Image (cartoon, rainbow, N blue to C red; front, side):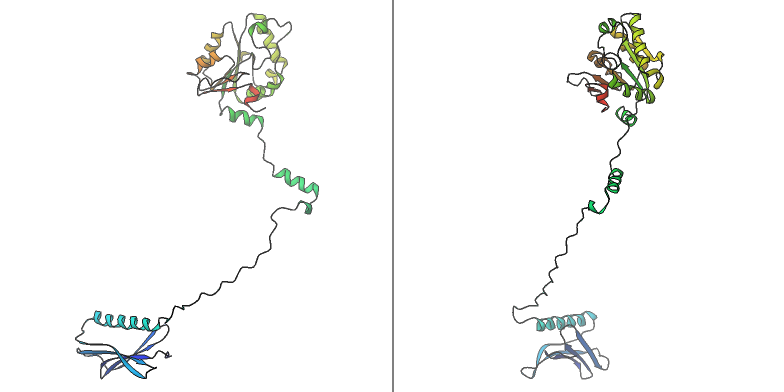
Length: 293
């Protein structure tokens, strides 16, 4: 197919012609005649259809023995062809207008509860409720899987808070009902030791009776031999250091401060908000509050 721009011929010799048809997208080269000899003469002509005449574009007469010379000639022809095809004015090819996307109908992603019966919807809601951990799992998590725990009785497990108050009790000591469930769970999971300072043997018996009536010895894994008594506060410090627990729970700030260097973790029980004793000493208003009960 020949374009309206015309065509060009490269005249090598009388025996060889290279004819170029200038089209909109490519150049077709037709070689006629015999092989080219060593002496080559090149003349590039362009046919002007408007003036009905040939225009000489380039003429080369030299000895071209290398392939690079022929490449240079071809590049010159391609460059001239592109100049001829360039648009004459500022009007270029206009991009095709992109079709505007049609507004899609909005899809309701919210589930329609009216489509399901109320009983079915309730079952589905129950299935997707987050699983609440059990108290045993909470105890293990909060204690960081600590296996051996020592704990003071007064002010933590018992309602009474001082040895003197425990001594004047006429009948027996009182176990706090809110902490009983936590203590029973700790006896199942931990090697728990309970300890307290008492003033006489009668007080010791009252404490053991209160623990037994609360079911700590029967429902849990605690035995009476793991309830330790001493006559002075320093005796409790000695118990803890000898047992070397993973956790110690106490309400005496001085004892918690002394044991901070020797015990891995401690829980200091105080109804009042106080400053942190040490990085490894946690503070809570009660034992059950520490476990979120």
